Length: 408
Image (cartoon, rainbow, N blue to C red):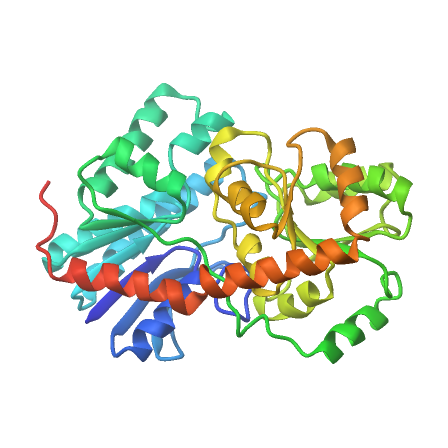
């Protein structure tokens, strides 16, 4: 089967970001499929006009430089989304395909996907990574009634034209079926890359020794975006409380985003920056395994907004792959999973003092840490391994390819 795979922010392991699409695309090629990925090049540098093509593990990747970063205004982001929508539609229409697959965010990637599928008279499959427009509305980012109706119409358009929808969490699947009950929907969350996160203990010892602020001290890490929705300052405040109990605790932030400077300023204001709190710019995915290998615990946070509970953040599954407990500050399906298995902590969503006390208590509890590491490993192997979830993904594409394109 020849698959056109549209993902505006595709990353490989040498880049900073999630590698779900890379891992799925290369496995499709290994199974005998042909895959063309259409994406953007968001690396810093002068704007270039035209497409660049690379071949990575048998996957043909078509790149067009469309500037984008987490510091952009909402209006500037919308412009980048619209620009890629037009470029991807033109590119996808020229490529041979037996099936077109598009993955959000943004929701606008559905448009080139549907256009290409209709022109080629082939099925379209859509993947929902964030529930739009429900989440932006709940966050207050989408206030204009006309914009809300347009976004809702775009979501309906995507679901209506999809042979099947892949949702990254049960909550996202429920959102899809609530808007379009007749659309077949399958939950395939993000995955644990067990091979990637298998590291040599000597590398971990070297990492700790090279960072003299760390040594053999307990370490909690946060890896990923520092956007408005992530609320990483929550962890800074929690660590302020935790280090009153245990001054040797350390917190490493590895990432980028709009909230980088405010988070750094808060850490400095609380007297933690450079002592307890250390901040590193984003690193390639290939460097994360040794960082998580050196961690006592990982973390994932969001602002106290109910709609964000349905997330499927890569950092959660990276922690499982590394056999590390994870602390989160939200409810929903991941919280239920941690409570059921003991693979981490579910912290109060707003009370950073109680969160700090709980972190301090568990970061030194070797018996609890051993049990949590074992539980995280079992989850990674038995429920969330990349190979296991890929089987479900390929099954969606195979059965969709047997269908006629959805009627409109």
